[in-house]
Image 1 (cartoon, helix red, strand yellow):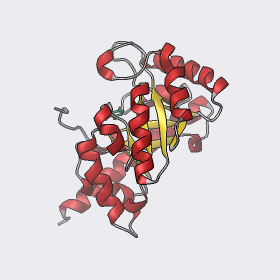
Image 2: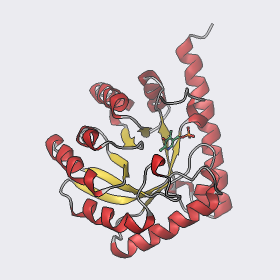
Image 3: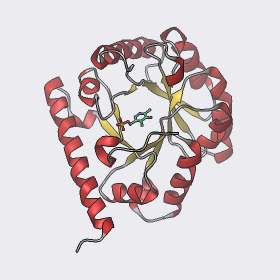
Image 4: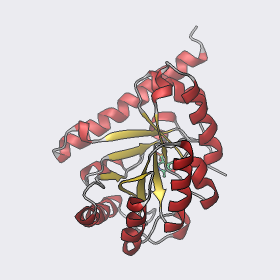
Length: 241
Ligand SMILES: *Cc1c(COP(=O)(O)O)cnc(C)c1O
């Protein structure tokens, strides 16, 4: 009989391999090298035991979307010194409340959801307090739907300038979630255009975080450098409350 942890490990390994094959195929179709694309495994709602199994399977980047869940998971992994999970890079991909920003900057390596100037000061304060540098992506709204987060395209430069000027924060690039109601390929092409425009003034801002389980192929085709993949690796999750 296999114990449950072994079964889960095999399941995650199989799912990871399937996602890796999808990424390789999409890269081949786009004439890109798979090394240009980093897959971040989004572990929200799943237990820290899954995070540890993923780290053991070679995953280096994990994503979370709520501070109250992410903080204890990140701190538990960091405390397991000498293990693969202690070396994970933590990505915060969810909507960020202003009063949680300083906390998130205490453990996140990269915050994907910087979408307003008001977040910059608490993020920088949290980074400073923890004595670390935090990478930031400006989240762009491609459909102006206020419930999904993101700054409108015409506000990107202002947020990017504020991040770039802040001590302890490093501007890395842009993030977007494809709008529900439209073609993800068109949305990701639009994001690529916004990225080109941003790099004219911030050449260091090279990351494009786009693409999830359902649309990673379209994101790779449009030039995404980082994919945020949850369900395709971990299985379906209960809806977030
Ligand atoms: C949950 C989440 C993901 C992962 O979505 P899947 O469809 O499970 O791959 C990616 N990005 C963000 C911002 C998320 O909140």
